[in-house]
Length: 339
Image (cartoon, rainbow, N blue to C red; front, side, top):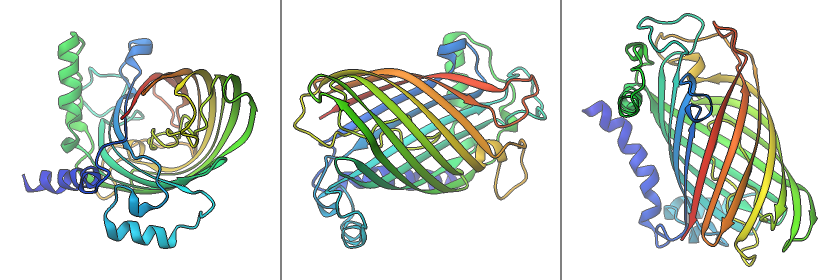
């Protein structure tokens, strides 16, 4: 019980910190579900993901945002992006499950992913102006049985009458996850009408370090449609904060839009816990390449406070899969409600 408390209490404190300030939860929330079962009825590699996020209203200073007072004062004093006058905070909780292809095997499968579940909370602080956004993130969590991957996957499989995975006894051991990140996004081009048909091109550079994932990513997204919002939302690099850039810089724009998007990302990968296994103990792992390519396309629409999106994602597999697979595909479904 003490081990579980050590893991779960920091997560609860991280997400609950925003409720200790005057802003409370009077802003936005995002619920995202990612599951390759919905695409090809498989249940391997990146099996499923779920995240819930709170996105604060834009503020003129961090002292007005849902942050502990000492942290807010320090950020206001040290924040280097003065030209970006809107400050924001995001709190999120995410759960991810990874499994090998052969769910009937009870032994370790050499050359394929280890069974692993990740549960982590992320706190993000950032600023944005008309044409750029910058953000810093801190993620704390756990990989291993405490993340309840076996219970969640087995329960869902029993509910839908699917085969029960046999290899969870080989999953990664309990280990705390700590990650820090930096991301810069910029609007490279805007064309057409803000209140009619138009579009834009977004670019991003992200860096992160820790035992969750250490990587560097260059990404770009093209958006085209009716009343494309003046935000910086794009399909971000894997395990990143999905809600980053969700709130529009121009809040006076009418909240009614529909648009298509397509994105591409190239990641230089140093380590990832779902590939490299446990950091401090011996565990199953796979040798992997130092890069991942990821593409996506989809549609998004907003009507009043509701924003919904559906994206198809394809990513290269950075290891030699025992069955010769070289890519994975999945659907991403997102919902946001602006309070």
